[in-house]
Length: 388
Image (cartoon, rainbow, N blue to C red; front, side):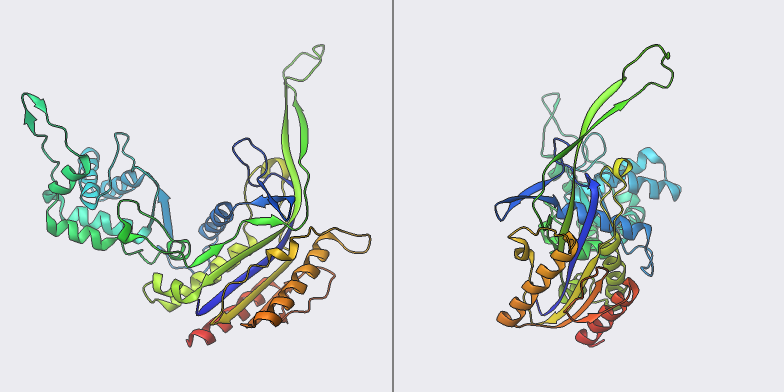
């Protein structure tokens, strides 16, 4: 990575179950020989995307993508709003998507989740509208009085004129959707339209060993007669409490490339998503636990001609709190000690900005007072490094 931005976060959550596995238990992992709390990278990225959607700040309209199997319904709704018949629109959409190589099942859904920019979706709808009369449903061939079976995708592709297929193919260019550019996408049927992610997000792990805990709960029927004792529902919920180390690395040149060279959009999106990565929290079981705890420590570094540097090994030996030092403070101390060792051993150092809310004095980079200042200093350095 020629131009690299990295984020290191220490975030202590109160008792919670933010990210569950298939049994309902909080996700965990064995690291350094000890069980650690874990929040998956997918969960963190989803939370960040949703935060930006709710708090777009300076992002222009249409700068985000949609991950969905219901592309048909979205396109039909757009065409219907333009005055087209809904049933006929469904047929045209199915033919058009088939011409692109995307099969639609009997329920009107694509075979897998598609991650498309809203501009890409709008352009597909415009092309269907423009070539409405040319998108005729393919006729089934007869053989011996019975319909001859053919590969559905091939039939659909053959039904769309080459000119329209080329136009539809050109539409899938990422649509300058910032989240698609940041996190990438894979289209199994159209590998040439894949996007390599500009951002890598690590699974968050606790800096210390954790134990699984259980909450036994009961519920009582409000209309039950007073002389009828006992609970009407009982159960258990598993939870833990952990100080998590979170890490993400962004390749700024790749991000700009994925956005078709739009530097200003990259900077606006970067501000929105950096804020989201710090502020967004997973939503799992929050109605039961309300673990809305902001990070106590955020360090951002901007480096050139550098390799990514995940500092999780600072916690290979679990951190332990003491009478004079909290778990988060001990984690900050361990993190910064590892940071300095790696910086001395491997170099490739850059600008560092630290937002530290703990009582432990940070020894790294420039100290900032709040999140706005952290973002301002980071973006100023990014602009200087990119020469814009």
